[in-house]
Every structure is written in structure tokens, then in C-alpha cells.
Image 1 (cartoon, rainbow, N blue to C red):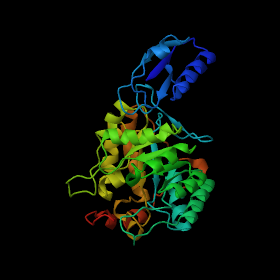
Image 2 (spheres, rainbow, N blue to C red):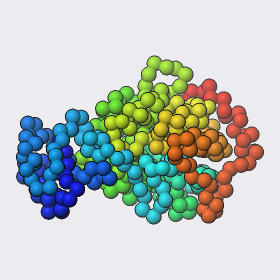
Image 3 (spheres, rainbow, N blue to C red):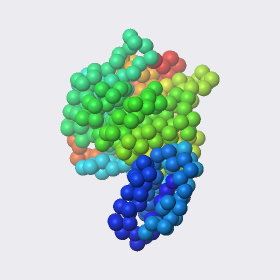
Image 4 (cartoon, helix red, strand yellow):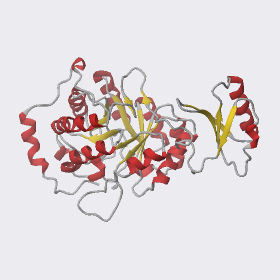
Length: 372
């Protein structure tokens, strides 16, 4: 249920509606948009009669929300949500295409600092790397933990990049919230409801990846868990689903992008690295993702993928990231979006070296199986 307020409604009118909602054992959420201002009624409303609110001063009308997800729905908030980052020009969901790039995992200081320098030099504003790694095999590299988070904090300090990293349980989320700018919830945890609730209590943006077999409704309901706890800074991310195909690790479902945008005001990014598991498919599907209207890309980048401790087969080289950005820029412009240009003031240098291209040529043979 959504109580639409009149344009001339006062703070006292709004407060009276919220008090009425709470007196019924429900919760209120004020939604202020350019087109409509109102209050969402949160909770099990059952057969609650809209007449409870119709006659209150300042109320224009009461709408029944038909979807199971309420807070993520465009019925509550018609305008797109844009995630802002204090002290930075970066946004996700705004006019600039958000690009998040970096290695799958933090492996060493030398690795992350070298990659961060290249990535920042290309104008990318977000750096991704895992300090905690949920792996299919218990014998695979599980991440550096707190040491990895401290290295990511140093990346932010040195290069001005915003940090995106994954929390795999409530204990790790406590740490990630301290060190990161965006808390990532991975595909395996999309329906870990206790973790989603804890993320909803955080005061950092949450990047929620789609589960390996999640429907659109299940994906949006997972986001609803986060928002229901009070955190409305949610970014969705399509990262591929399990199908019967054998030519890629997963099937990147780009049709989810316009479907999400029709149903929800939340920004939706695309991860073509996990979506395919193949390096040679990342650039083509990045072009397609931008063309279909995604709000950003999440990319795995490594300077030596063959030696990567996780997901080397799907990690592009820094020079390929540079080429990817060059190719998606004109596509973004067709959709009235911009792509950040190299930031000379950051003191970082893009990787143009011919030697790097030569080193990467052999690794472009992507017939090898993706890592677990």
C-alpha cells in the first residue's frame, strides 16, 4: 500500500500518516520523488482498508501495490535510484556508466597496487577485489581476509578508487562495512536471508548479485530484504545463470536488464566476466550489455591471468580493459550516457605497452576450462 501525499502536504501531515501506520503495527517509509511524494506502508497489511488513510489531512490517494516486492517497485518510486558516494563524482545509476574493475581476489600488495594504478589511469572509479572468497572447493584459495581489506583501504588512499568487495557471512560483513565503499553480496548468498538483513542494517551501498538460478521475482525479493531493514542504497547485478549450454561457464541473461528496469527503480549492472567465464567473450558481451541499457559493468582484470589464484580464465588484461572502454563509449553515447575519461590528475598511467599486448596474446586462447 502506498499513501500518496498532496503537493501542499506539511511535515505535520506526513508525521500524522506515519503515526497512523505505526499504530496499526506496520512500518512507514517516506518516498520523495520528482513526480510523486508519499509513504509506503510496510508489513503484512492483509485486508487493511485504504479508508484508514483516505480522510487524513494531506492525503491525495491510497494505492494498492500489486507486487510482492514493495520498496524495490516502481509503483512506490517511479524515478530511477541513483547511488551517490560522498566526496566523489562517482555514481551508479546516473548518466555516467559505472565501471567496476579489478582482480577476482586480493593476492598481494604488488598485485593490487599495480592493477589499481592501471585501472585508475583509465578513468575507472571503482576497484573490485575479494578479501573473502567463497569457493566451490574447500581446497581453493579462500582469500587474505583482514589483510586483504587493509590492502584495499590502501588502494583507496593511494589511487582514489572506491572499493567494492564481498562479504560472505555476518562476521565478514562487519569488517567489509568498515573498509569498503560498496558491500557485495555474491550469487551464492543471494537468498541468505540473515546476511541480507545484516546488509540492510549497514550504511554502505550494497551490490547484490543474482543467484545462479534465481527468477526475476526472487532477485527483487532478495533486494527487498535489504531495503526492508532500512538500507535503500541497493545495486543489482546480473552475473549469469546456470543453463544447459557448454560453450560458456554460465549464460549471461541480458534480457533481465530491461525487465528489471520495468519493474524496479534500482540500478542494474552486468558482470560479463562471471557471466561467461571466458576472456574472449567479455568485450563482446560488455558491448551488448551497454547497448541493452545496463547502468554499469563489473569486470575482472588481472595482469597475469595464468597465475591468478582464482578465475584467471575469465580475467581480461589491463590493455583489454582499455580497449573495452574505448569500444563501449560510443554505444553509451547513443543512450545519452557518458564513460569517464582517463584522469590525468590521479598520477596513474594507462597500460599501453606493446609488451603487455604481446604477453596477453597467448592467454586469449580461451578454450581452457574456467576455475571453480
